Length: 593
Figure 1 (cartoon, rainbow, N blue to C red):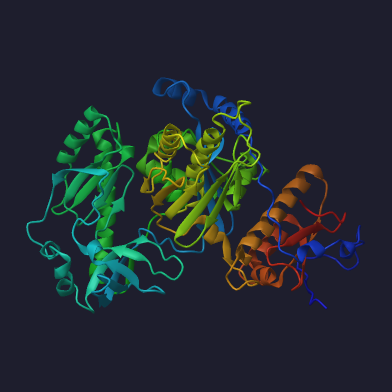
Figure 2 (cartoon, rainbow, N blue to C red):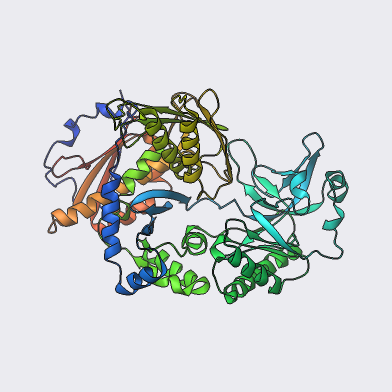
């Protein structure tokens, strides 16, 4: 017999004497005992999303519409940032004409590792690997390749070097090749490193000694001694102006800077202010280097609110909506410091409906965890992710060709797949080697069209990538840099039913979904039954999720009950699948959808 446990809230009022409508225990619960079936992919009507976005664009303040009219082309895409903050995670959606183009998730209880700077101690040198292992005070020692210890090793071919600012003499400049590294950094020596790639699976974090501090318009490199401009800025006259600005910047000896693409067409005083803020940041880090013993944490990148102000809120973004008042105030405060003119774009979303549902983002995010994604004309792509390889298969499915004779049928499916694959790689944060099996095309011109579509679709991808032509087997190979785990790895954990051969959602993820469904039920009840004084809900779930709700998340549940005169009881059984749960309104006996 299944083991059942009940939890009665201490905020329940006369629960035992209250008559119940509907027999909750007679509800069918057999569907909770087996793994949930992934729903069939649904094609999202992108035309409907575009129409809704253009309608929102018309409702902007008159001042913004006038500025947009004079600054931009008439048919400029309408770009929005939608920020949702919950008890355990923060999410930022970047949508363009209503269509999701970027998605970032931040677990509020986890450290932000990529970009963090540590003072560590060399634990071991491996000549065979040409790498050092550095104790930075984390669970696993950091991996430091010898090439990442050479001065200027992080030089990027996408950066044009226009100024040298080398130190006349320093210990770092004595390292001229990898042969000098064991002598310069023997075992036990202290070293300052920055994480370039977070721990993924069993691999420790990857680091470099070539530190960089990103600002809004500049990237400061304290040890580089070289100054450059992003090659993505293509206008020759603008590049000439930026070169003059770099030459005039007051840099300390041995330091380097890079002008980011966001600095295009910006006045000189913006760069002076950005450099001043970055130098102040570096002074704080340098004082910690001198005063703290290794291993020591020195610096970490800002959270998603800070990154929104620094990186995401560019000139081409039209509107930012955020549903948390505290985060809204913090975002405004950050923007005031680095880009005051952008304040007018930010607004606080205070409607009852959840912000991601209001802007049709939630259902688009659901696709990022599905194996199959539908294409506009009926085809589909099937995506499989492993630790180092992503395989993508393009199928015709129920593809509908525009012409009865079927000509260009295959080309149309492959062109649609190329655009969608580029979008899905950004949304899912896929990296490593990506193999795409397109439908076979005999015509070389058709293959070139698909290759061009793929490269055009990935041109705005900030991750470094390389797209190779389609091979004789109809295979396209793409390499894409990934600094952190993919989004799916943050939602799922190793399946207890198949000892790691599959994945299921973690109790934290299920807890978040349960709290989200309860919040939606409260909002819906306020709208549909404004006179209702008390809400009673019963939740059927797996014991592992109940332990999460009774432990780390119990304060959140009790706060809900207190604030909304809410009563929640739980019934857990081992026979329920770990991903399944059901929330039932005890008054009418209906399941909350």
